Each structure stands twice: as structure tokens, then as C-alpha cells.
Length: 466
Ligand SMILES: Cc1cc2nc3c(=O)[nH]c(=O)nc-3n(C[C@H](O)[C@H](O)[C@H](O)COP(=O)(O)OP(=O)(O)OC[C@H]3O[C@@H](n4cnc5c(N)ncnc54)[C@H](O)[C@@H]3O)c2cc1C
Image (cartoon, rainbow, N blue to C red; front, side, top):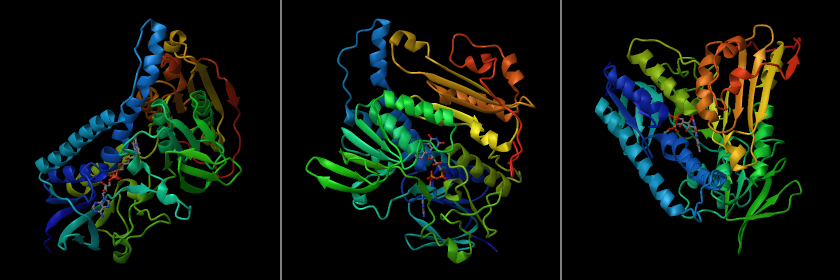
């Protein structure tokens, strides 16, 4: 049976672009549909513009800190439109590169929505139908909404936050995940008055408890108002802007913008998947096996739409593995264990492996090494901020199970520490590594005495350690 193309990719984001390019370099005839902008969430309205905003937000403290080192800096002023224009120019440049690289590899790009019409058939918004030997769904995720909240249409999501015409002087952010936490840091750094509202007790659920406590303390020092155990009952427009009302007794707060960052949902609505027999999970995520195969043999899915580990490098690797396996005759399976990750809060978080709480659930004996200290730069700048370093070590095998850092450059550090943890390094391996002095990272190889020891315990249903 012959098909129009060997592979049709729906979605031009991190996973889809990588899969399309690699499949084409293996000789496959590939077509890719993107309904918004090439590059997807990461490039257009995620990691990249967010990180540029993080950089913009850090200058304020750099200027202040410079005084301690003898610099006199004139009155500093941030111009939102200048920054936004520079950021947009960079995003346009990246978008162009993504498209050009695909075209160079021989991929045909079509700028429109596509849906699945059959196991080997894709329908385009312009009415055409394309037959494909394989279909890859890489449609990502979208911000969750609170569909019953009165006034929800007055709030923005992370999609709109990158396009605000002016900087909000006052912003209320709902959510406790990394996106909410990062934007709280960004807007505080830019000088906005920030309130972060979360229904749980602490931000960053699932992260090591010490990291969560540490960052909350640092955010409080920066004047970010942390309202925990609270949810919105409504948003109304008033003469002064927007007013947010709360369920659990907090007084209403006025703001210029309200950002809802309450999670993300896989983009499967209206894609035609159920009709062709592709099994979906309760949140609409596509259920796949380790080779990213769905319940229909000719349809695969990668990235956020499968809701495995929702990060760009993971989507890229899943897309690459799929293309090598199906079109390159090289079968391999992406490894989802021990993934280093960062939260670009201010200060930054870098984390890899098990949190202390996860490790304790395994019941193994644990040695915890923990240090908090003032980063060297701030001994002179005078800034009241502290850095946290923590190692979670298996007390019997000496294996380092987790590394958790909160402080400047934590994201850069954890990429490298992640290699050691992934390789199964022991605490003795860390200790045998010479320190780089004077750095903050040297603390990782110089913490000699456990700050806490936990004996082995029998825990029913304990998960296997990596
Ligand atoms: C604010 C924010 C910050 C983030 N920061 C980080 C970070 O610092 N580090 C990190 O690793 N990850 C980060 N992420 C997550 C990261 O962006 C995603 O994990 C990654 O983009 C997933 O890639 P993907 O290919 O699965 O989907 P996406 O990149 O979302 O791409 C999906 C594409 O499919 C298109 N599409 C959807 N439906 C259709 C259709 N029917 N037809 C045609 N096209 C369609 C969409 O327009 C989109 O372009 C962030 C996300 C957000 C929202």
C-alpha cells in the first residue's frame, strides 16, 4: 500500500520538530503541521522567553549589589516595551531557525491545524486529507483553566504573560508549581508587587521539603507575599483594576493582572483520537508504551501530550528515539529515570534524583548532608540571602540518591551533578573529587559529616531505588 508520506507529524514543538528532522535524515518523506508558531511552547511561550524574562529581572539586584563593591550606579529604570521588543525579536529569530532547519532536512511544513482522520490518515484545516504510513502526535499541552471561577475571563495564563503591553505594577499569581513560582520571581525582580496564592501549604509540591522551605523564606525576604492554603472565589473588575476575593478568609487583593498558573492539560481535545481507537488517560493524555506507541500501531505520541515528564529535553529525546527506532533501524528507549531539572526562581533551584521524603519512603538507611551559607558575593554586597546544598545518600551502599541546590547558578550546577548521580556515583566518589575553590559548588564535595542519619526501616509497598 502506498501513502502520500512516510510520516506525518502533528505539532511543531520540541518533540515534533526533532522527530520530523531525524526521520527525514533517515530518508523518510515527512510532512509536519503546526497551527500556531514553529518551535512550540518552549521557544514561543515557555522556556526561552521565560528565561529571557528571568535575566531581565535579575539586573535590579545586580545594580544594588554593585554598590558594596565600590560601584556607583545611576538611577536604574526598566523599560518594559524595550525589553519585550528585544525578546520578541529573539523569539522570531529562533522560530525562523526551526522552520529553516526542517526545510533543509527535507520536511514539508504546513502552517495549519491537523487532526487524525484514521489510523493512516490526517485531515488538514484547508480540507485536504494526507495519507501517512505513520502518524506522530506531538501537540503538547495548554494552560489549565478554572472553568467555574467567576471572572476567570479577566485573568491571563502563561500564554498571554509574554505579550502584556505594559508591566503590571501589582500582580496576583495563582499556583504553586514551577511556572507560578518562576513568574513570581520575575515580576518581583522587575519591581512589581507580587502575591503568590496557592491552595496547598507550600509551593513546589514534590520537591525536597528543604528546598521548598528555603525558597519560601527567600521569596518572603524579597517581599513576595505568599498566601498559602487559599483559593480564589472570584475576580472582578473595579475602577482600581482587578480585585481577587478568597475562600479561606484572606482579605480581597487588588491587582493590575491576575495570572493563573494552575497546571497544564494535554492537547488532545478535538484531535479525532478517540474515534480511531487511541486510548486516552483521565486527563486526556495519550497512553503510550516505552516506544511511544499508542494503542493504534501506526500512531505514536511524544512530549507533553503523553504527560510523562513534561520538559523540553524529554520531549526531544522521545521524538529522537521514535524516529531512530521507526525510520533509522536503531531501536532505543528514552530513559525517564533520574532527570536533572531547574526552577528558574530567584534564587534558582537545581535538583536531581530523590528528595529526602521520596528516599525515606523506600525504607533504606539514609545519610543526609546539608549546608546553608551566604554566597561569597553577598558577604560584600550585604544582600540577605542564603544558599542551600543537600545530598541524600543511601546509608548502606553510599550511593548518592539525590542532590538539591537552591542558590545562584543551581541550574548550571545540577546539569553536571546529574551526570554523577545518573552514573551511580557514591558519596566516596564525591569526596574523592577535588574541590574547585572558591566556588559555591565545592560544598558538594566537602560536606563530610551527615547532618542527619535515618536507620533502615521496613515500609510496606516501598518503591525500588533507581
Ligand atoms: C511558561 C513555561 C515555561 C517552561 N519552562 C521550561 C523550562 O525551563 N525547561 C523545560 O525543560 N521545560 C519548560 N517548559 C515545558 C516545555 O515547554 C514543554 O515540556 C515542551 O515544550 C514540550 O514539547 P512538546 O513537543 O511536547 O509540545 P509543544 O512544545 O507544546 O509543541 C506542541 C505544538 O503543537 C501545536 N499543535 C497543537 N495542536 C495542533 C494541531 N491539531 N495541529 C497542528 N499543530 C498543533 C502547538 O501549537 C505547539 O506548537 C515550560 C513550559 C511553559 C508553559
